[in-house]
Amino acid sequence: MIEFSRSSQSTLGVEWEVALVDRRTGATRPAAEEVFEAIEASDPALADPEGQTPHIAREFLANTVEMVTGVATRVSEATDQLQHLADRLRTYTDPLGIDLFSAGTHPIAEWRTEQVSAKERYQKILDRTQYWGHQMLMYGIHVHVGLDARDKALPVVNQLVNYYPHLLALSANSPYWGGHDTGYASQRAMVFQQIPTAGLPFGFEQWHEFEDYTWDLLQTGVIDEPSENRWDIRPVARYGTVEMRVCDGVSTVEEIGALTALTQCLVEETSRRVEAGERIPLMPRWHAEENKWRAARYGIEAIIIQDAQNNERLVTDDTIDLLNRLEPIAGQLGCSEELAGVERIIRRGPGYLRQRRIAKEAGGDLRAVVRDIAGLTRDGYPD
Picture 1: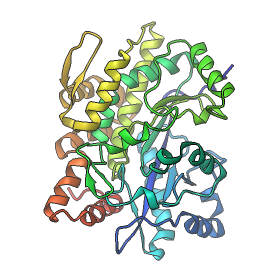
Picture 2: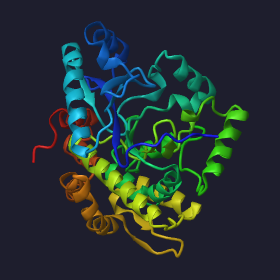
Picture 3: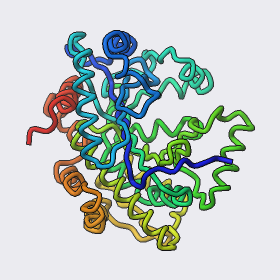
């Protein structure tokens, strides 16, 4: 039996993975341990993952750190915490000539040469996954949203699957892999699903189905504990949340706020529908898989499948209608300004479009893309 630790409804926690890159060359730097040694020597609370306060955590790769908020009630509170964490982190990285880099993948990094963190948990993953595990050279945004009842968890998961292509298209920021244009808006989404238990969740509607699934994985040694179920959208019973892990790493705190607001509003809307006795319709599995692929391939130009009746629509048109529908909820949650940022992403274009534009202007030199992303991560958009 998996106990679900109920949370205050629609509270937030956000996790932001960033790469450490050399300011001069743009190459990734496996300097996470060096950075953490400096943090732990002068500000150990900043690297303490045990409490619910904002902190910085180690990640799978030695070139990666993760900034983690505490529990927030508003999107602005979460983004303020992330900005503060980034500013504090730079007091340790700037003297080392290291920039923070936030995108879904690094345009020129070579996965074959990247170092994996020495932490036993990560070495175990690498030992099991081998060739595919070595390719986990990627960065994302994870958003936890609190739920006050266990019976809301799976309907929320299923509804977020329905809006998976919207979230991925808006955040798509990984067209390059190993120095090559993949033709995809989100190479990260395609690579990450190779790991066992990663990818789309199954369409469970009853909690006991999720318990049976988790028990089977534990009994057969697929996972050692529930957090090793790495679905793109998953219930996190120990926190009383659903975690949205769809998004590529976006380059600015502003964009993180927009995606967090969209996620929070979708979860709150679904919660209210469950309370009203509604059933959330399940997207057919084959449609959900196709939508994920279309969003990863075409980004905001994706034509998505909307329902089991095979209706289709341009993802941006559907997103605009979604924003209008969610605006009253955003007003009540205090995130109207951040939700409006979704429309700015559509107008400006997601990160994958900017990366290709910068590369073209630089005559194909992807180091210019790295410099541009590092600048965005530090200062945000100039407009």
